[in-house]
Length: 257
Image (tube, rainbow, N blue to C red; front, side, top):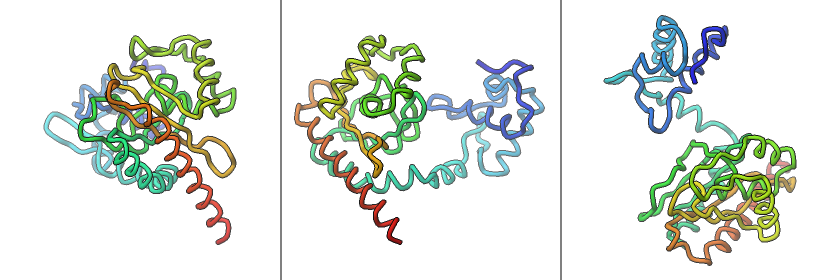
């Protein structure tokens, strides 16, 4: 819902953020009218900011309006958690895709959502809601549940406080069900998304731990429900353990410098 006139921020940076947040996977090109509607900003303000962002390379002017600019992509690639973790994870993800023939995801937990840092699609991958840089509610994804199972209680409580909105008829929607699921994941080390975020898609995920023993990320494999063999759970767990060891080695090397 766009902000009301009273809620419009005074800060120029916050106003620019309102414009940028109007874009999404299904809103890649926005007209000026779209930007005004999504941001709630006055027409003159929205037009001025859009033109200034275009000059900076944060937006591109195209037929039909504006698109996100390459400068945003370049800056996003410099985020340390994304660059370092993705670089270390990529070889393990490629091996996992080769071994399983399934799509492979790397994600981190951000608040009550997961953010996908890397997505390697398989040739016969089913259509999924996940994409690189995209977000999904943690409680409906394999990677999200893998991380929540080893997160602190406050983090889990914040997820429960969202009301656990469903994405499919199979999504977990009650606190008791989610808590039981997280307990089972802690016992096995493997999380499953059984058509909870995408109908017809099964996902197996495992947590990645940092040098301090805390959960840093999660890796998953996803495919058509009927094609995801039981061996994929142990396979993704092995890849996650290998990446955890890689993070520990990288931390030791950094401390020795």
